[in-house]
Amino acid sequence: MAAERTGEKTFPSGAPFGLGASLTGFRTLFYKEWLRFWKVRVQTVLAPLLTALLYLVVFGYALRGRVEPLPGIDYTAFLVPGLAMMSVLQNAFANAASSLVQAKMQGSIVFVLLPPMSHREFLAAYVLAAMARGCVVGLAVIVATISFVHLEVKHPFWILAFTVLGSGVMGTLGFVAGIHADKVDQLSAVQTFVILPLTFLSGVFYSVHALPPTWQLATRFNPVFYMIDGFRYGFFGLSDVSPWLSAGFVAASFAALLFGAQRLLVSGYKLRH
Image (cartoon, rainbow, N blue to C red; front, side, top):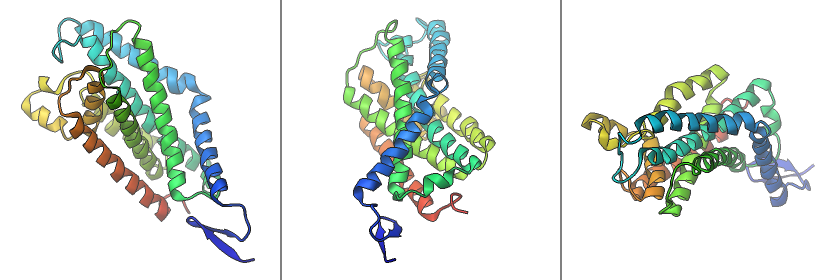
């Protein structure tokens, strides 16, 4: 039977693998990844929400009135955007990474690779689902805290921009980590020794200007710092660095990670045996 090439894979002539079927495959994979975390939302949404609230109670009320990280901003209010963005980033990473590692360990990854989808659609489905989980958790943190913390929203565009860019960066990074990792232990090591320090040392609990000059310089090499600082700017109109600089840095990181993840998919690294 004659064959015709569609996207990046070859299929039998006459098979209904045109644009409509390709989009259906993308939607199906995205929906699968959405259901994967939403079905266990007590673990994937409520648990990180509780963690963020505990941080708020412990740090916020312990240091309230003693620390003014930004002029005129109460410390408890200062904490909320940082905790919300930290939740977005950590959960976006975890969603893509854990899904790929579990699929590889169970051997079900072959059923995800077989459908007629291009590499871009495959990547987009995982990354967008990871972004969705991160955004759901971040929104839950904001909604749960606004009842007892006064928050202003001065620049909603920047809030949305950094939510999308930040969750996209960490979702793509989680996708790359999921491809590299063969076991849950390897993935846990990345989360413990890379993701956790990057998020905790990014200005969630403090302003960078409160640090000694050496640590201020070190913080500026942390990409998560720009995500949280820009996100916080959307609420208060105050930040440690220009939101345009932060947005440019995060957007460039997102583009570089997407390119790297696409190259890994094309090569079939650790996905095709």
